[in-house]
Length: 400
Image (cartoon, rainbow, N blue to C red; front, side, top):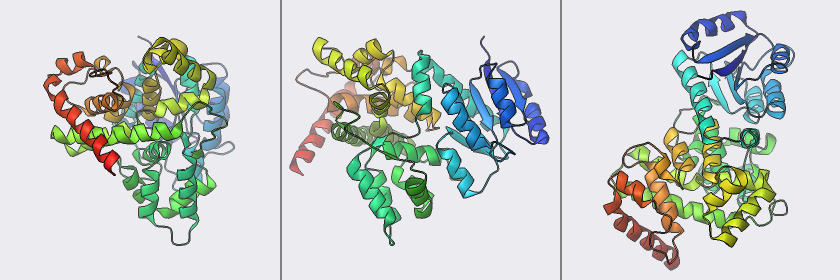
């Protein structure tokens, strides 16, 4: 068994001693190192490879935010986690970019173990180290220019409305993904497992969002000149329609509230990996799209040939690093190949897979729907009703 290697950094020797005791039971699963400064961490990383770094924020000399920025730039494959009791807003804002997740002190052993284990388990989604490095560097995804401008204008207004801000954020795939990262980690001490971007915006509040957008630039604007051949408007419309249909499918199956919410947000974010690939591996990604067109392949098949992974796997990896709920990560990662998932019965993955496929249907009946998967889960007889929901949705959209 290959041990995962985890590096802990904290200038307080009592904290490090407490971590050693708390994580003693993990010694057969993790190889752990404990150092008291960013400088010691840099020296250790120069001679030894680690999978995860967990660091405090406030330390003499180089602080946690600067250390994580250094790790991001020089060891992009590593998962970067903050473990801190820091409550200063300015300091917390500095960690939003270079860190993947934020855990607050005191942190119990189970939460810390689960966070690190989950981050490490994501590696199975991607075989290529180059892709892991690319995704790990991603701090934000490109947003629609019109939505970005609308948000900046609202935030700059003296009477900015948090309700209106939430509506704007919820219209954009990239903004939704980033804001859900912030509330599903402990950056601002908010409740976990928030599934609605609008609710996430309301929890953060106007002043925090104003600082994140106008000062920290937590969102980035799509530059059409840098991404020729990528139609962000088209991707947004497909994602929006998929999310609405996924939600309706889950509601039709009388799934619980959590499942319905996860189906909706996963449907909206299912193509987030395409933004990562288009922005980070532009030539190879466009080559994959051309391969799909010229040889009649699915987009997933072409991406795997040219890039070694699909946009679903890339998106799932990123959202998992960002701490989004497991059902959302799984639905995004496997939306094109649900048979690879072992989750039984109806899940958000089921809703997103079917919704995405039905939104993409051509004249070919059930194009893209994994019938074997539905049969395996005893859901094949539900497909006709789900297809009717898709038809109704298209008719309502045309009539609007």
